[in-house]
Amino acid sequence: MRSKFTRPRGAIALLLALALSLGVVACGSSDDSTTSSSEEGGGGGAIVSNPENGKVKLTIGSKNFPEQEILGEIYAQALSAAGYKVKSDLNLGSETVARQAVKSGAISGYPEYASTALTSFFGIEPEEVPAGAQPAYEKAKAEFEKEGLTAFPPTPFASANAVGTTTKFAEEEELETISDLEGKSENMTLYGSPECRQRIDCLAGLEKYYGLKFKSFHPVDIGLRYTVLEKGQADLSILFTTDPQLAAEKDKFVILEDDKEVFPAGNVIFVSKQSTAEKAGPDYEKTIVDVQKGLTLEVMQELDARVELEKQTPKEAAAAYLKSAGYTG
Image (cartoon, rainbow, N blue to C red):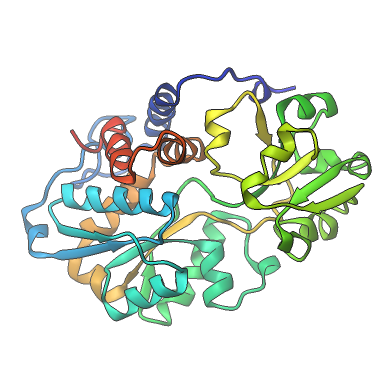
């Protein structure tokens, strides 16, 4: 079995620092504009304030749950460091409200999940949403452009449904991918949300595209999806890839790789009015894309854990990320 099932648990702060360090080194930089690093192997480098940006006022929004609020703060603080006059509105509610706020000009932009945009806004069936980040982004961007909006390139991490289990069970059953469940799932119980039976990124997709049958499926409240695993009620549970528990309890839980890429891409894309992007100039998109480079799945899990488990504010977690990644001093 690969070591991902045996990683020791450590302090969240230490894990975040390590993950940020690795993420920043890996992402690199290809040019030398205000938000890129001149150091070889750097990860975007310190954001440099451009006096010209001070003429532009921006309002950065987000939907009203922790992960979105963290992202909203990251973008807002980064753009402020780039010299823009920035305020934030991190309590927009649903994606429908957020989209309308961008259209009306109430906000300059907000983070959205590519899969949510395609299914909720543009009527794409879940099974038609690409599993790959780039194809999903391109499809969403093309649709947004018809509305006078634009979308910036996606985050490295994807926030999506996933099949999870305990590390102990994964080791015993030799499970690393969803395909590893073939020939075994008939003896396993699966827990998921009540709508899981109909969702392509849940039971429906596991049956249709992986050909899996389970001993039983049980609906469970989202707040109990880890509890049923810990108590042994469930062999498998539908988790979320950015759940903070996956960072805080790495020794206890694991998600199985969606090796057939069935579950729709949940990478984040920043949505803005096209006219706003043009007025704000090149540093607007570049700053947002640059500060995303360190946002790997592991880092996003750690940031969610800081807010949801350690009770930091989204503003504090965002500031810690930007500083640790070297974007701000």
